[in-house]
Image 1 (cartoon, rainbow, N blue to C red):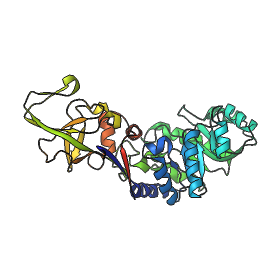
Image 2: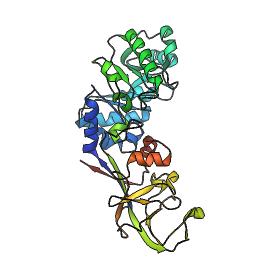
Image 3: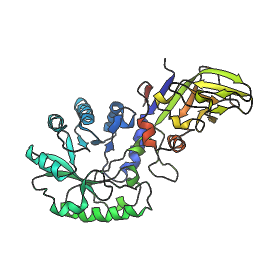
Length: 351
């Protein structure tokens, strides 16, 4: 038996997939072990939901997804964001992965290697991966079997940001040069914006965080269902007097007689140390503040006003203290919280 468990609701995952499905043909971003939730079970459920396009960051991640498709005897495409490189060329050729080409040098290398299906990523303003939009007129794309034209919005989670309109305008211009090629724009946030209404019928969306329950937008109510629930057992309970210092560094001192529960989960499991003295867990739907520093394996919470006993399961993150709550309190994003979930957590998949 484990002291901490992560329950992944695959039915909620599929329901979130259906929300995005309304905007057209969609794929799924399953990089980083499906955002920490387990690429095998997640991919199999998405396959059952009708998904046929999967996006990963690195070729080695793509191999695992390609093998899943093969074992399930389902046709699908696995796109590799890093493109065609000196370190992944053999992996791509052997596994049938499709590189998303990001530069003129990648295009030349891919052509010399024999070419084949590929995606072409145009950087319309993020200054990260992709062919800079200013270079598109001089780009030699002859002989490429471009199956998807991609771009990525830097500020899609903030719809009113002026860079969104500029990137949309640039991509509208560029996609006219690749008439008939299906397009793919952004992730979850972009799909909830107004731009999708102007996309051609042939497009492949690529949601990520929204599939896994995070709010794709920076504000407003989260339209996605909770997919991941992290729970841990209470290992010990004690009562201390007012003025008692707690934990490493004695960073918290009690103001009253306090009942403390020590919970069997810590930063080795993905509970950010930034939640020290700031975050909360949930006991029977009530928030219980974190007291002192989060340590590697244990976290102390105030249970003075709630009913809980040693051995009970309490919610670390889920329906009461949501993924986005945790991210905001920790001063980060939901992506980092999910991908930081530790490998020693017992993972339970609920159909």
